[in-house]
Structures are given as C-alpha cells and as structure tokens.
Image 1 (cartoon, rainbow, N blue to C red):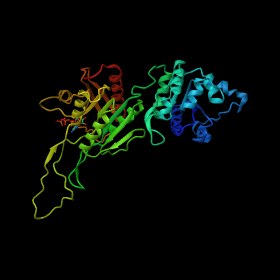
Image 2 (cartoon, rainbow, N blue to C red):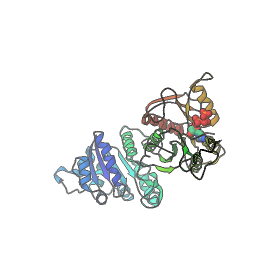
Image 3 (cartoon, rainbow, N blue to C red):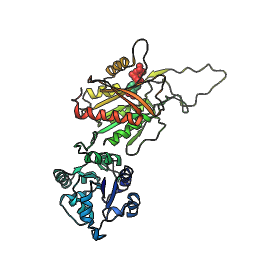
Image 4 (cartoon, rainbow, N blue to C red):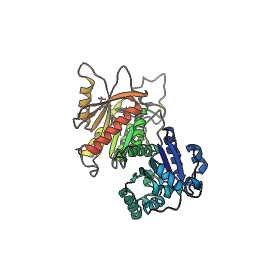
Amino acid sequence: MRIVLGVGGGIAAYKVASLLRLFTEAGHHVTVIPTEAATRFVGTATWEALSGNPVSNSVFDDVHQVNHVRLGHEADLVVIAPATADLLAKAASGQAGDLLTNTLLMAHGPVLFAPAMHTEMWQHAATRANVETLRSRGAAVLEPATGRLTGSDSGPGRLPEPEVIFDAALALVQGQSDYQLPLAGRTVTISAGGTREPLDPVRFLGNRSSGKQGVALAVAARNAGATVRLLAAHMEVPPPAGVEVVPVETALQLREAALAAAVDSDVVIMSAAVADFRPSEVSDTKIKKRDDSADPVITLVRNPDILHELVELRNSGGHAERQQLIVGFAAETGDSHGDVLAYAEAKLERKGCDLLVVNHVGADKVFGQDTNSVVILARSGSEPQEAAGTKTEVSATIISRIGFELNHVSPRA
Ligand code: CTP
C-alpha cells in the first residue's frame, strides 16, 4: 500500500518515527511529508533514513514530478500525525500553502488525522468546529489519548500510541467504520504482579506472579485506544510505554490505589495476585535468631477482598455516571467436589464481577510462563469463551471481549 505520512509540528513528532517503522515493517511504501515546523522537532534525515524515500515539503522540489498532485492521487492512505491544531485548521479551511496541504486536497483514499495538542486547544470551539468539518467530509479524526502532556499538565491531547494509529489506519483502509478502536476514550485500570506482605524491614510473604499477564493486558488495552493505569505490584517485567504506572507493594496499598483509580475508570481488571493474608504484626527491626528464644510463630490476618469491594462500590452507585465493567481473574484446580468451571462459576457469583478470566492451574503452571490458556465467564450468562496462546494473544482476546461488553451489552447492575 502507498501511504503518505504527514507530520505536524508538535513534540509528539518523535513518536511518529515508530509509526513509520510499523508501516515500513508491514511492507508499505511510505512517503513522509513533514511540515516546516515538524522538521524543528525531527529532522528530514531521520524521515529519509527510516522511510527509504526522499523527503520534502516544498511544492518547488522535483517540480517535473508534479508531486503536489501526484502524491495525493497515488496514496491509498494519508495519515497525519501529530495533527496539530494548526494543521487541522489548515485542512478544514482547504489551505494549500505547502506540499502536505496540497496532498490533502488531492487525496483520493482515506485520510486519518491523529491529533496531539494541549487540552485547551483540543477543546477550543475553533478546533471542535474544524474536527467536525473534517469528519463531515469523510476524514477520520482519532480521539487523542488522555494523560500527561508536554508540561506539567494532563488531560485529553496526547498523541495516541503508534500501535493505536497503525491499527486504526488499517481498519480505515479495510472500510471498517469503527476505526476509533474498541476502547477509544475509555479509561482502564489494571492491577498486575504479586503483592508482598512485609514481616520485617527485610522479609516479606510473596507469591510467584510475574506480572506478564497484567502487562500484556495493559499493552492490549493501550493498543485498543484506552488510557491505561497500571497498578503495579511486584513484577518481573518492566511496565510498557504509554501507560500510567502506580507502584504498590502490599494488598492494602493496592486496595487504596484501586479504589481511588476506580472512581474515573470505565473498566477495572484485577489481574494481580493479591495476598489473601498478611502478617498481623510487622516488626520495625529485623527479626533476629537467638539460641535462647523459641521458634518464631507468624500469625496472619485476612486482607480485604479488593475485587469484591470494587463491585460493591460500583453497585452502590459510587461512580454512578459510569457503567463500569469489572473483571476478575481466578486460578482454579478441580477436585473430587467439583470441576474447574463449577468452582469458577461459584467464584464469579461470589465476587459479583462482570467477567471472570479463569486459569486452569495444575500440571502446567501459569506463573512466569509466556503462554496461557483461559476461559472467560460472563455474569450476563453468555457462553464461556476460551482463549489460548501467548499471553499477548490471550490478552488481545480478553480486551476485545471487554470492548464488546462495553459497546454492545446492556448496562450492568
Ligand atoms: N483478589 C482481590 N483481593 C484479594 C484477593 C484476590 O481483589 N484479597 C482478586 C484477584 O486479583 C483476582 C480474584 O480476586 O482477580 C480472584 O482471586 P482468588 O485468590 O483466586 O480468589 P479467592 O476469593 O481468594 O478464592 P480462593 O478461595 O479460591 O482463594
């Protein structure tokens, strides 16, 4: 496919180098047209090297090739990223002062704008009107991601992640009307890893969770267009780029972070392995072994069930304006009293969450491995859905199921 990648003059231009890579690695021929302002952020040499094609934004370069007409005509897709307020305004008013705006006027195929700007600019009536105009003419304008912006401010206005723009672009070319991606504009909170319950300043009770599944879910949710908050207990893998990370250690810290994050979340996924118990006392000093003392005894007390609390908060109208979807995880083994699914169905009922992702643990363990096999149970009563493969593949299935529930299934309790 022939793609024109128009780069606007915003700090997010550097992220577009990754988008360019995604396009070229997928075998597409990409012509990059940066605005003059964009070249102040990322130089022409970078675009030429990464695209393997000459780069210009002047209508007076290679005039014999009539680039200002040809590039738009030949393109199967035009992607503008970052689409700045200025570029959206120029496109909406049909200006043609440089090669990029000429190309937009000559484009025959789909055009995708991926905006990035400060929140006030995005919400300004002028920008809203420009976006409306462009959409009414058939252009696709992505919703920007929400999160930290260039300065200390945060809000809607971040450039969607390169993978998000990539997926949206392909969906657009395939004629899918839902190029906005299933979780666009949604905030998703995901807990990951294993909590650690301290005994003294150097010792803790922990578990074998690696955090791989939670991180894979965070990537899948991010790529589906969501703003992702990762509540990270102990993990063996680094958190992904493009998500907000809230580090936690204990179950009580995770509870506090989860209840706070839930207030403005459309989805909460509890994939962390939360310790059900914690030592009743934490020693301020290292517990010493002494020949004259008896063997120490550790007394445990129950930790709160965070998932259950989240459901109760939601059901009591704690954040009434949102129809929040809550997803639990369960590691189950069958025994003489019942099979895995029977236990899982009872747990779904007990916890009250909307979806329960069930891992069958046993001979082939789940912890730390890169593959997984799960069954997704729904409280709505729909058929159990199976997913198997790498944790990335399983996560993609879970996230698309969540998108389906949010967009197509009626409101919850
Ligand atoms: N969970 C939680 N708070 C806890 C323990 C678990 O929120 N204190 C969440 C986990 O993140 C997971 C789900 O609950 O999403 C299932 O946890 P699990 O330990 O399997 O369930 P339990 O209710 O503890 O049942 P069991 O008797 O099987 O241990």
